[in-house]
Length: 237
Figure 1 (cartoon, one colour):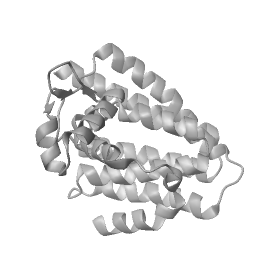
Figure 2 (figure 1 turned 60 degrees about the horizontal axis):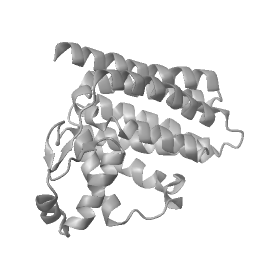
Figure 3 (figure 1 turned 120 degrees about the vertical axis):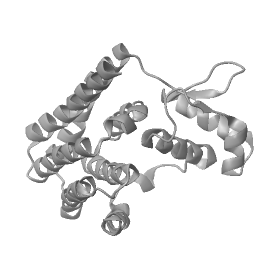
Figure 4 (figure 1 turned 180 degrees about the vertical axis):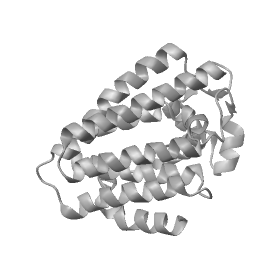
């Protein structure tokens, strides 16, 4: 399965809009690695993120690490208090409720814009459909890692964002998703990944046939289903 995923990522890289972004530099690269580790559950809410050992791990000075942590603080993934180390943030129930409701609206609009797009390069549409199938395969593979699922879904949303051609909405959707990266690991059971992948397959098909209402409806449903999962986790904790 890793072979198919890697081949898909390599083949679709030229189709994404990522090449148009400015280089992130070292702080951006460090922030990306730390974000992925938070998302995968390697770093959990409340865990300290100390600049000195991270600088050693990344082979750099503390400056780029501190800048990376400030970026993650702006994304609400990290909390930094004066004269203390940064820690992975925790979100309260009320903030989560509002966040997911807003994300449902933005996420629905994000996929709707892709389905509405008049200019639809066949190679890009085909890649979106294939991406949903790759995601479903990864979700159904008991040997796959959470990181594999994250990589597959990230590429799928990048392709959808390229088709939507609405940079502001795409970035806002991604920003809202990054802010709840701390929830990915506890929510990402094998069964949950399979359900989510099935929803993304419906979205991809709706985009392919130009069904904006269907894409938006499924996009909103997926996010609100995540909210239900968060509520269950909160109730059982």
